[in-house]
Length: 397
Ligand code: PHB
Image (cartoon, rainbow, N blue to C red; front, side, top):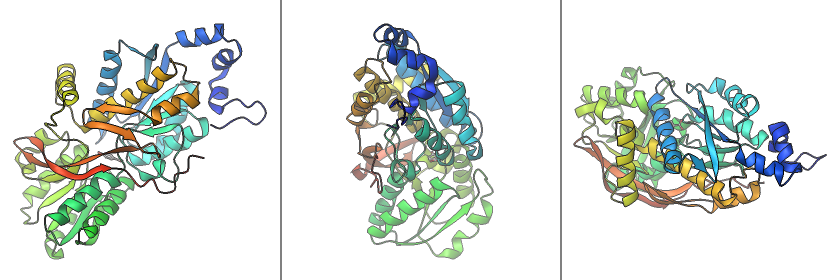
C-alpha cells in the first residue's frame, strides 16, 4: 500500500477525501456511516466498437452476481458507474482518472482491451484503487508491473495461445504462423503460440498483422498459400473475429485455422458454417458439465436472452472475487490488508471449474481444447492442465 509520508494514510484514503477521512478518524460512528453508504464500482468497459458485446456480457454477468446476493456485497449496497472506454487506448488514462477522481469510485472492474488496461493501470497503481480485470490479457500488469490492488479473473494473452501451440504440435502440424492485430494482445498471444508450438517440435515462421481494429484481411489471406505452412493460428475477438473467420472460409484455403478461443467465442451464430471444425484453446467451453456452469448458463440466458460465453464467465468471477474480499472485511474496503489477503487466497467456484489466484494475482486454470460443432465450442480435451502464467518479474513491492 502506498502511504503518504507525512500522515501514513494510504493514498487511496487521501484521494477519497472527506468521507473516507471521517471514516478513519471517527470510529465507530464514522465507520458505521461509511458502511451504510453504497459502494461505488466503476465498470470501465467497451460498450461500442468491435468489442461492444464483450463489454456488455461482462456487465450483465457482474450485475447478475450482485443481484444473486440481494444487491449487496459484504453488507454494502453496490452502485455502478458505467463508462464506455470504446477500446481506445489513447483515452484510457483520462477515463480511468475520471472514475477515480471525479466519480470517486471505490473499485474498478475493467477492461477488455490490453492497451486500455495499461492506461487504467497507470492510474490505479498511483491511486491504490482496487481493480479487477475481467478480460484484458496483457501480461505486464501481472508480471513486471504487478500491483497489490490489481487482480485478474480472466487470463494472460500467453495462456490460451500457449495451450493452442502445444495442441497444434501434438496434432502433428509442423509449420505454423500467427495472424492477428498489431497490439499487445496479438503480439503476446503470438509469443505464447510460438512457445507452445516449438516446445512440441513445431516450427513457427512469422506473424501476419494488421492494425487494431481494422478488418482489411484480404492482403494477409493472400500471403498464406505461398508460405508452405500446415497450420494457421490466430487471435481476433468480437466483431473482428466474426469477419476474419468468414473471410478465411470464403478464401478456400487448404490450411486449417486454429487459435486462442476468442476467435470463436460469442461469435458462432454470426459466423455460421464458416466456423465449423475450427479448433481453439481457452479456459472455458460450451457444455462444461459442472453444476455451477449449468446454473450460470441458465440464469444468464434467462436474464439476457442469449447464451453465456467466456466474457460473461470472467465478469461473473470478477464480481465473485469482489464479494469474497468484501465479505472478509464486512464491507470495509479501506481495510486493504485483509481485503487483499482474502482475495489472494480466494478459491472461486467458477463456471469454468474451480480457480485460484497465482501469486501474481492472475488466474491459474485449465486451458481446454475445443472444436466447433453444431454451433458450439465443444470441449474435446485439456490442452494445458492447471496452467499458471509464469508471472515473470512480479515482486508485489
Ligand atoms: C485484449 O486486448 O487483451 C483482448 C481483447 C479481446 C479478447 C481477448 C483479449 O477477446
